[in-house]
Image (cartoon, rainbow, N blue to C red; front, side, top):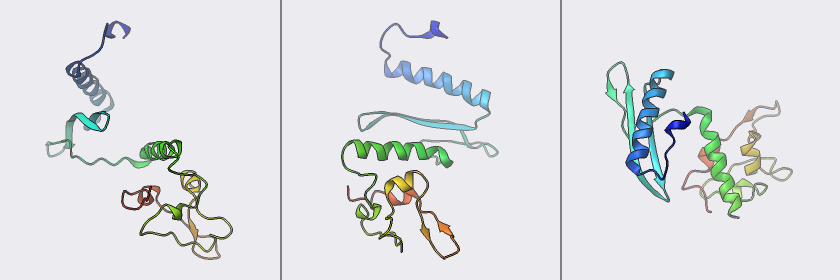
Length: 152
């Protein structure tokens, strides 16, 4: 494996070819029907490519617009983005989340005692009590951090 390491900088074409090979091997070995990726430099997509089929049974190819179900693995991406905002001083984890929301406020009868914070949401302790029987309704962090909801 180490014998394949480059001696110097890679060109975009070199990176693309290496990715094509790695993706083909991964898709075959893991029985993955499709993978889409984008290489980003700064704020610009320099290459986007889809591999395989979005519908294997009907042989419909995946493309750069194919939507994938990410499930829980996207939580890491959201948490990383939130922590970047914290590092930039644009977000305080312990400040009530409603102070950042525009056009959307999360009602809670517990705001006086313990307002809902970003820290609560990141640790899966966000929510509101609907009844005295301790029924908890969770709020989606992705919903709250939608581009039109934040005032940051």
